[in-house]
Length: 613
Image 1 (cartoon, rainbow, N blue to C red):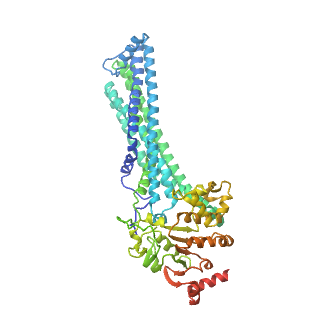
Image 2 (cartoon, rainbow, N blue to C red; image 1 turned 180 degrees about the vertical axis):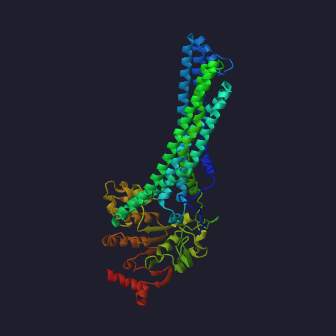
Image 3 (cartoon, rainbow, N blue to C red; image 1 turned 60 degrees about the vertical axis):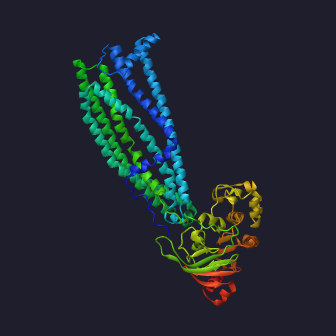
């Protein structure tokens, strides 16, 4: 058995969530040039965002309108540029300033659009790759993983959690785009009026502390809120997947109450997050107004005293917004950041789930002419964290032999077939195929040589042909036709509107249960495996249809090693031998008549079915 992997549950903590987010760089790496160009455009947009208020305040207000230019106050070269434009274009300085202002506004709009488009495209491409890798990873996880983890959980990780990462990355890029204006604004504000800049420091400090407090209070709420939303998605998936069982059992009211409990828990957390947000935003907004008031008061006094120009105060007001915007924006993005941090923990916890079947470093290849002999040698097996289900099981199935396995419900019949298919690891030296220890065989190669027909099987979206061949290029249309004919499915397939090209509805809803089961037979026959396992394969087929395909089954089973699991004992009476299993132990073995004459468990099962029938 593989070691116990880390917990996947929604509330399991993961240390150092920041390092988890940093791992996203791996998926962004293929798009690094697109990201680099986007960031360069962001810098250009940020610089133009600084130049726009400079043109308005220092050039238009101070220089052109008030003629109060102060050489000690920086204008970032915009005054000279306006003068050069006015002279070169032979227009008034105000017209040149207006044109330059519109140029910077237009350039900022274009660069911002290009930055957001390029960066969002890179993020979405990277996260699409992450989603593909995540899907490929969960497909490779062994069956034991899905014995413990609900499919709804995995579905949420691949869909909504990845979407949260996209929201967060795009939001963080928006915050990063404010860094350049912030840096320039601080430098210019210090050069304009160091005293006034220092007076704003306490306000900025309070905003920073308010943002930190907001993040501290809202972080756990957003994490739990995301978890409850994940549980809602999981519950919806599980309920809709089992809708027929729910309706048959009349559990609608019970399930609605349970869903209502989850929904109410999510609502309470959402409400708490809203209360925290509505307390934070007015504080930040009022502090911003306080900062504006300080600038008007102190800056106005400086203008009145002749130590500052009106344009300088106007520029100071505009730069104050650049000073506070990144801090406030971090608060605005807190929701996305915390949601994404929780999502990234769950995603990478799933990606880091290293549970796998033991694959030998140098697997023993199966021969092209596999005979199909199967040997169980005192095999013991238990599911992880469970009681033993197979006890000292020994059985030698000869090549080409048909062995039926019967026994009460829960006796371990299906478990034995799953072990043959290598869905689980077993102790070395306990199970052999043609004399080769199954633990020395590559599971993928083994499954190509073993065909399984289940009572409950899956039909994929696509045509009838697709569902027989399963995308295997070795299965041609002619192969599919021969397989369908062998199991008596050809007539009903050709009667469909498009024959083999007929598209199947969800779960094969446009076919009867018996027709779907016949496709399962055809699917395995088309692959031509040397070992065939029938696990209640005819349980969903009516007696008339079962009798019609019995001859086809005999042809299919001829020359193959076959293991048949069936509760209807009359369907396996012609097996070469019948293995009777009880509580994971082999208790009887022999042909049908010999087991009846023995008067043991098999006879009691047989008599019970005859009385019930």
